[in-house]
Each structure stands twice: as C-alpha cells, then as structure tokens.
Length: 336
Ligand SMILES: O=P(O)(O)OC[C@H]1O[C@](O)(COP(=O)(O)O)[C@@H](O)[C@@H]1O
Ligand SMILES: [Mg+2]
Ligand SMILES: [Mg+2]
Image (tube, rainbow, N blue to C red; front, top):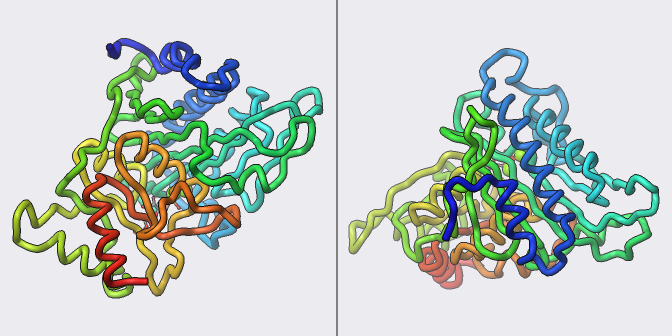
C-alpha cells in the first residue's frame, strides 16, 4: 500500500532490497540526482530573469546553441554525481565525449555509469513552458579496477538498471524506475522534499492523444503520414486530440497519465530522427515498458537497438501499447 507521505529518500531506501545488486550504491546515486534536481529546479523557476535565460554562447556536438540553463544543469548534475564517488563515467548531451571519473582512491572501483540530458525541451526555457531532465543508469561492463571505456556507454537499453526524468512544470516531479514499476514524486517547495504522489504509474493500453510536430508532416515517412490521418479521422473514438509541448519528458508524462502516443519520426531534415538514443529514447523506453507502454523506432524495440555512437539519433514512437502497435502497422505497410 503506497504511503502518500513517504519522501523520495525514504522510498529509495525502503526499496533498495528489490534491486539485485543492492549495496546502497544505487540508492546513493539516486539521492545525488534528487539533490541536483532540487538545485536545478531553483534556477528553472527563475527562468525569465535576464541572467538565466538565453544562449550560453557555445554550441554542443550536435550543433545546437547551448542555453545557459543547459550548461548550468549539466554542471550541477555532473558535480552532484562526482561528489558521491559512485559513478565511473558520465555521458551528457552537453559533453562532446564521455567524462571518465576515477574513484577517490584512484582505483577505478566505481561501478555505475550515468547518461543524462541535463535540460530537455531547451526551446521552451525562455517561453515559460515546462522542461525536464532525463537520466539513464547502467552498471559498467568493463572490469572494475580499470578505466571506463566507450564500451560501458554503448550498451543496449534493456541493460539499464534504472532510468527517470524530472519535470520542471506546474509542479516539479521526479519519476523513475529501477525495474520494479514506475513511481512519481512531487516536490513540496515549502518543505524542499519530494513526496510520493503517483505510485505504480501505468500507460492506459489505449488513449486518444497524439503528440508529433506536424510542422514536419510533409517530410515524414508515408507510414507516419497515414497514421496521423488515421488519428484525425472522424470514426469510432477518433479524431484523437493533438497535444505537443515540444519537451519530450513533459509530452511523455502527460501521455503516460492520460493515454497517448508521442512520435519523433525521421524526416528529410532529420534522416535518423532528432532524439538521442542513449539519453532520451532509451530511458523513456525503459520507463514506458515498466509502465506497460511500448517504444520502438517504428520497426525495432528501442531497448534492443545496439548503440554505435554516444550521440546517435533514432526515430522514436512511444506510448500506449495499442496506439504504438497501430502506428507500427502503418509503418510496416507503407514505409521501409
Ligand atoms: O522543436 P521540435 O523539432 O519539435 O523538437 C522538440 C523535441 O526536441 C527536444 O527539445 C530535444 O531535446 P533537447 O531540448 O534536450 O535538445 C525534445 O525535448 C522535444 O520533444
Ligand atoms: Mg532532450
Ligand atoms: Mg537537452
């Protein structure tokens, strides 16, 4: 029976036994993310004040202009993880290469790696629309006692030991899974603690919301175009409602609560899609499956895709199982 007064810290400790490698290290790691989320939340809430908004002046490896909050969130999460002396490596949307982190005794004893999208939905920062942070956690595959390598980061999503996101929206929430269902915690700003507010979150198997940037419609594969037309038809429980925030974590969260499908297909502008497999699609796909939803690139289960590059992009379809199945049907019939 979930306890609404339970804090995230208490929940992490209480549930650490359900984790097969339980030693307290993952709990420690999750607590560093909890702390960093609160620090970033404080800055995000001030987004609008001159010194927080706007571009930082550099571009990241994806060629995107880094926003000041992208850089700030990146620094806060990386420092919080380093301080806990648990991770041996971090990869981030805002770092060209992975960051190798040695343990305090310089003996490479740390076991975990974290991949992170420090600020998701950057285009919404300056316009007061909800943004997020997305994280993915693995155990390293290279031998303990040796430096971390790229191999530790290019693991299939199905090997994640935990994943989650933070939403900085009407309220600030942290939603995560360690492979035993999905739970959501809401920050009580007066007390400064996250409380269990959404236990055992699940995608309704069906829904009536579709989320896609229809501005790219003409560039989409035929299968996606056909599926969007299907969503708009006046028939049965359709037309569905179109909702698109432009922040992956926020669109995912709404669809998980209400039932819906999010799509970022490939297009002529983005021939491999836009979203990054390692720190956007894999963590959201892990959560989706833990919440009885589904995630694919239209053909292949996202969690089965073998990564080849740190910042690789993939087409992404995710949400209520019956809706993703339908979209895949159209992709198989009309696209290759
Ligand atoms: O503006 P577009 O092309 O629709 O893209 C929006 C998508 O891009 C993203 O903003 C990419 O994430 P970042 O902001 O972390 O780069 C997603 O959150 C969002 O779903
Ligand atoms: Mg993102
Ligand atoms: Mg980002």
